[in-house]
Image 1 (cartoon, rainbow, N blue to C red):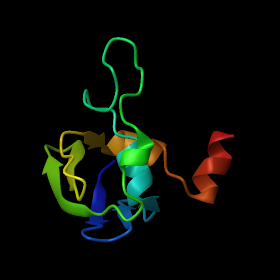
Image 2: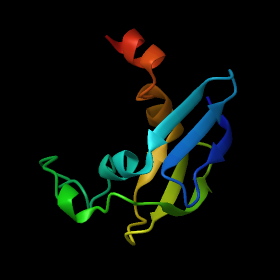
Image 3: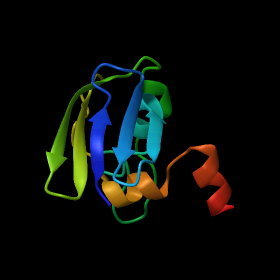
Image 4: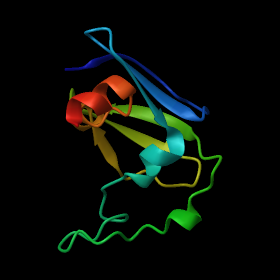
Length: 104
């Protein structure tokens, strides 16, 4: 499923509106902390490399780029820009109460 709209430049949240009308809202910092790129997660062990204390509370997205038809890449205000956030994963991990209840 693809989002029909992505909002979040210079905001404290990243909002995705989906084809089925659902809306997913991630706090920008939480999304940054969930980055799975090789700079943030050790590739072979899965050990976190990112120290959460180094990510500012007021983090914002400077740019959001589409990557094919499957992901977005975000350039964060802390300078990080190598992570990919797939649409499938963003939808699957939606933090809204309805989606949280379905996963429980």
